[in-house]
Image 1 (spheres, helix red, strand yellow):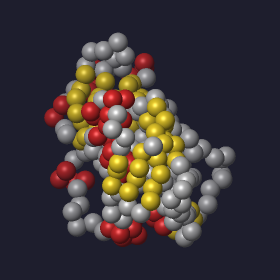
Image 2: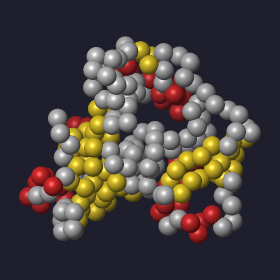
Image 3: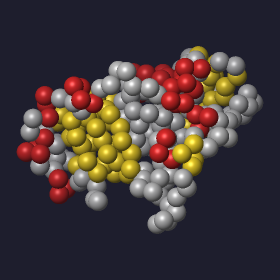
Length: 222
C-alpha cells in the first residue's frame, strides 16, 4: 500500500500523543494529500459527514518482516502484564496499521497544497502517513452497548490529573494549543509503570519543550 496523505499537527514526537482518538477533542490536525491524490473531486460529498475513519501507518514502530510477537505489554496495565496482540491496539503488529476516528472541522478545497481536511481528536504524530480515509457512519459504526475489556476497566480507575501551569505559560501558545496541551497532560502522558515524583519529564509540543513532574494527582509544569 502507498500513502494517500500525511497528517500535520503539533505532536512532533511519540511521547505525549493522545493514547486514543477523541481523547483530546481540541487537538487540531490537517490532512494533506500527496500530489497524486490532490483532486477535489475525490472529496465530493464529504461535506455531509461529521467524522472520518483514518487508516494509517505506525511509521515509527516498523520491525523487520516476520518479526512479531503474539503477546504484547499494554502500557495501560503498567507494562508488566501480557495480552494477546489482537486484544490490544499496540503498534507492534504483523501489519503496523492504525485506525482512528476523527471529527471533520473544516474542508478547504483550494490551497497551495491542494484540498485539505482539517480534523480534531486525532491520535497521530506529525507526518504520519495515511493509507485511506473513509466516512464514519453512525447507524452502523456506533455501538453504545459495546464492552471495553481491560482498557475500559483501567480508564475508569484513573482520575484526570490537576494541571498547574506557570503564570506566563499561556503566552507561548494559541488558545487552542493550550486547551489541547491541558487535555493531554491531564490524562497523564507518562508510561503507567513510572511514578517517580522527583522525575522530570520532557514533552515536545508545538515546537517547544514542556517539562513537568507529577506528584499525587497534580501535574506541575515547570
